[in-house]
Image (cartoon, rainbow, N blue to C red; front, side, top):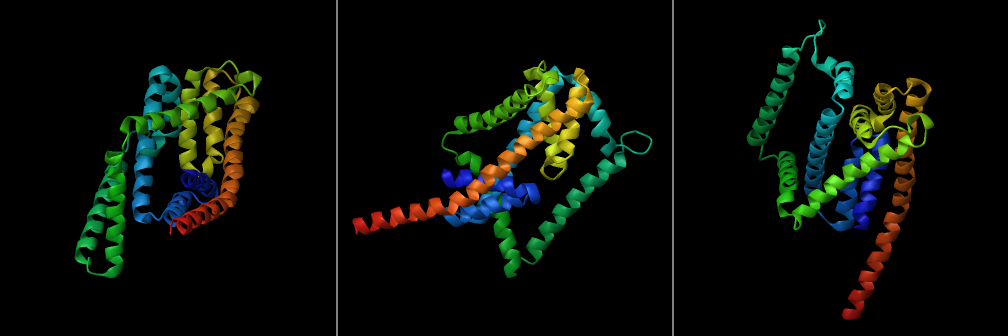
Length: 266
């Protein structure tokens, strides 16, 4: 459990400077200290992200139910334009291009793997893809599935509560409710996705969101956005660095205890 915990914190820390490299680092750490094939660990990361997407979609769904006017206005301003043409209408060409490009890419990958499967490096890629597939289906083998889903939901409940607690740091946002935090969490999560570590985008989207609750964008909405972002940043730095230091020490002690126990038993 501790190795997994350290790996997650180090992954968050590394993601601050190199987005998605943290996921690779997490797999590398667990492969080294727990002797689990890295390709299967990559699959569990993909599965984790898939469940995160489902949870984020659920947060958006709840926010649309309780805060439809707020999210609809924000989506019109920041999300819809990516799928619109210069005239402001939905761009069918953009959607078709994205879908067609994805299909062609997948077909090309399949052809290359089948055609050159006898080559060593291609075989290694196939093994990695198979490992990812095993990771995606690993949820079926979880011993306690209800607890797995409860933990997944609880993670996002804590995200929501931490956002709500941030409101109390500024007098002008103390009146915002837990339901209002749903909208802030939803749009803030988009900010974390679209920029490295959420820098800039997170604070901007939080600022724009709370403006719908009659909180002045400057300085209070802006201050709230940067405060919430900075709180996460400091957590990632402090606990990430601490994990870098503690991980090898913990495992050194662990291996020494295992060696001593083996020597006694023999």
